[in-house]
Length: 273
Image 1: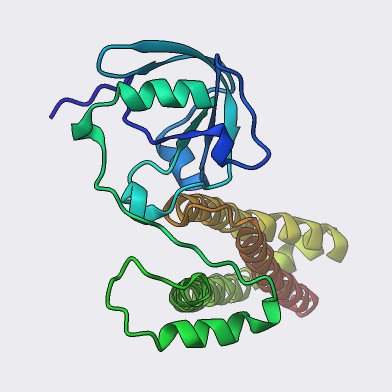
Image 2: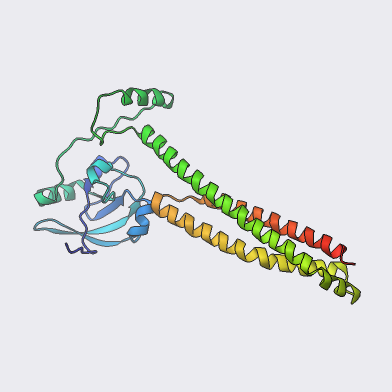
């Protein structure tokens, strides 16, 4: 099947059905965007579009995009969550001129909002006891809890493996510097006899450790950034807090290994006379 990027099949609703939204006959508004969809398909802030039926083409002024989701995934089949909001008169024209083959099977969607948040848990327990086998029936609280459990487990495993790798690589660099310091002790003895002070040698060591630990740190931070970027794409949301936590932790641990290496070099330089 050929895909035309200039023509998309999208659900359309009337502004009468959306509280707080009112557009004219020549205006349309998109609603139902997400961070994950933004990585796949981007919309401009404004412009001109055409709504095409079987025989009629209606030019419209595109006003922008809202994040709020209007239709459930059971209606959109997880395909195009973006909804076009039009004036009631335009909606009636498109309804009469629509292609029956493009229309999904008719269904009824019923959503129940619990105003008293303290009774939300009780309502979820009652819902779970209902003899419903249809997977399209779901509890928002249960879905939220299930996602927290699955994503929490993934983050724990990834975080544990990442922390283990971080400590291991830091230890390898630290012990490598310890071996090099013992091998270079004779050089420090010669430099001290040539008139170099302990401060001169320490400044050189600090620059050396900044290079030895700084490059792996920068590579690790870049890796964390692009890994979290992929998380934005997969989970459909921005995760700035985990990225900042990982970067701070990464920087802190590598800084500790770098400081320990400098302190060890100080002891070696002191013992070189």
